[in-house]
Amino acid sequence: MSEKTILVWFRNDLRIHDNEILLEAVRKADKVLPVYCFDPYYFNTGANGAPKTGALRARFLLESVADLRKNLQALGGELIVRVGNPAEVLPQLATQYAVNEVYHHREVAYEETDISEQVETSLWNLKLNLKHFIGHTLYHKEDLPFPIKDIPDSFAVFKKKVERDSNVRPCIATPESIITPEITDAGELPTMQELGLSEPADDLRARIKFTGGETAGLARLEAYFTNNDQVAPTRGRNGATVDRSSKLAPWLSLGCISMRQVYWAVVKHEKANNVHNTGMLELELLWRDYFRFMFKKHGKQYFATDEQAKTTLAEKQSLFEKWKTGSTGVPFIDASMHKLNATGYISNFSRQMAAGYLVRDLEVDWRKGAAYFEEKLIDYSPASNWGNWAFIAGLGHDPRDNKYFNITKQVSELDTNSEFINTWAPADANIGQTVAI
Picture 1 (cartoon, rainbow, N blue to C red):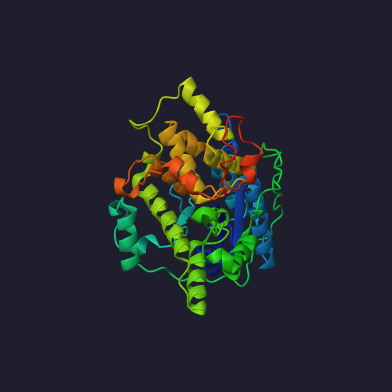
Picture 2 (cartoon, rainbow, N blue to C red):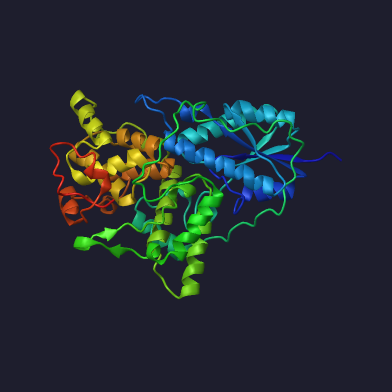
């Protein structure tokens, strides 16, 4: 009787814990072939002349894949790494290792689903099946109180119904061991230069260094609960809220840790300490679910031309460049963009403010801002990024959910201390009015 080999195609699920496709493959097959493919498409230069993936995010990805390989090796397995079009690479590996089936987690953004369809077609030509799993959300699609096509466009309604009528599934068990075929060439991770990027420099002002991988992600999750001042927000000068966000988004975006792992860690912490002070973290997880399900429901609507889009005239392009480089003269916006460019991460509040300023005050097409965030953010996730920008632009949602940010009023109420504005503020900026990021 011939052995069964299943190829596990890792994409945005770079972990061994709570990973259904990995556990299912171990249970169903005699041998498992884990594969990660660096697709050149994501490192090409876009229409704006910039790479789709910036250097900081690329480094985080490389670290995450390296950590996944190390963790698989600890279970007796190995990770094959290749650079190329998955629709070409995966069929080649499937033929080489006599693969019987390929597993992967289903994506929702159109670029990712297009790639999945190309892979599925190529595998079908070999009479191989690409099996889809759902593993990127907090609430499983099958557990929602409504079909995808009937998901409420209002986040408030979505939240109320889901929390009332749905439950979060427990985490998936971790394989005890992994048996792979005899791998003759596991492949080396590409260098930054081979991806067309320069090695990024770490900014000394950054308060946290984001290191990619499941190991670092789990350590960050544990630190969030063991460091009490990270759990509950505190107030700074002038009553401004000091950022105590979990900073887990980079690891969530690549699936180094799962939404369910975070949720059940919250539940465990609250039960053990008889507290309920992590509601904002749960809310953030639900927003990620909401945007992902909205992408599934509306598809390319988030990218299509709309009547509100502003023509990209020379004047608008100039305003966009000032926004990108933090030269608007508005200290909070400039500090946020300086920090984004230097570190690849800014708080959710800063993102909302920067996006609102570009769209409403400067009247620049929201998609230009979304594409820029795609390049720069370490924690870029298609649904969360493009969904949030569309939300700020007032597209496809209940208007009652979309609150306008008064930039002047908000900045005047914020704490006034930022290392990311003092150095780079434009000459005509009010340097005395600085903000804490």
